[in-house]
Image (cartoon, rainbow, N blue to C red; front, side, top):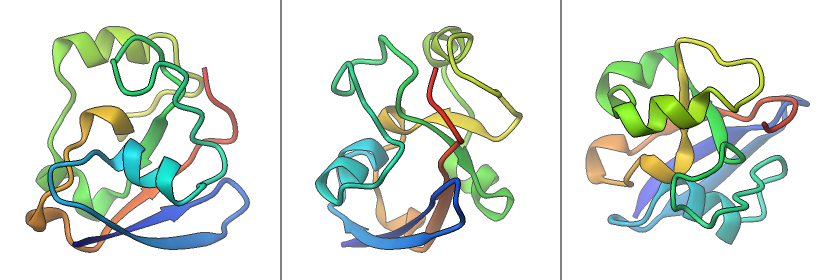
Length: 106
């Protein structure tokens, strides 16, 4: 299991464990993380699982694909650290990952 911390827009830290091979979005849904809506269920056809990857983790997580970048156009308050959590696969290298949930979803 890989530890993932979600920081809500209110500053609450929610520590979870994600199953390798799942996604950061699926882990958020399984742990009822507020602010992760995931309307499309992980199909990369909406922007309601938008997160900001903590600066310390951006290089390890990597950047978005071109399809993900297109969907981020529909997200609210996009930043350089923005990713769709449905597109981040949980893997051992991400143990300790911290992501921040925006104040609202696109």
